[in-house]
Length: 113
Image (cartoon, rainbow, N blue to C red; front, side, top):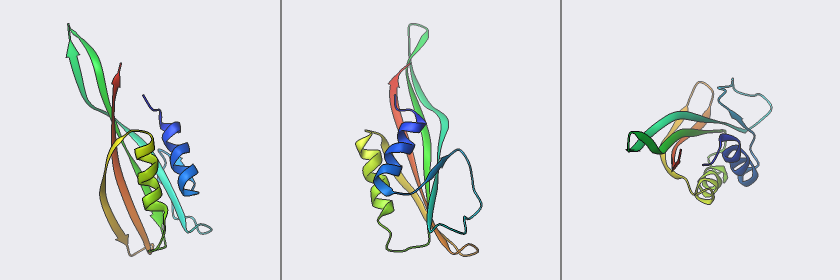
C-alpha cells in the first residue's frame, strides 16, 4: 500500500508545489500555491475466515492556488494516476475571503492487510 509520504512526494515532484501532511495552514503570504494531504481512515474492508484480508484506505489532497491558469491541478491528477490510486475531484471552490481557488481530490486505495 502507498503511504502518505509517497503521495506527498509524487504530487510535489509533478506540481512543484509544497504540500504539508495533515496540516491546515493559514494562507501563506509568500506563495501563490500550496497544499495539504491527509489520510482520513479506512474506507471499507474485505473479511474472510474471521479476519480482515483487504483494507481500503482513503484520504484527500487539497490544492490552494491564486491562479486560474495553474497547471498544478492537472499535475495532481497525473500524480494520483501514476501511483495507481482511485480518485475523484470532489470540488473546486473560490474562497473569496482569501481570494484563492481550493481544489479537493478524494483518493482511495485497496491492499492486503
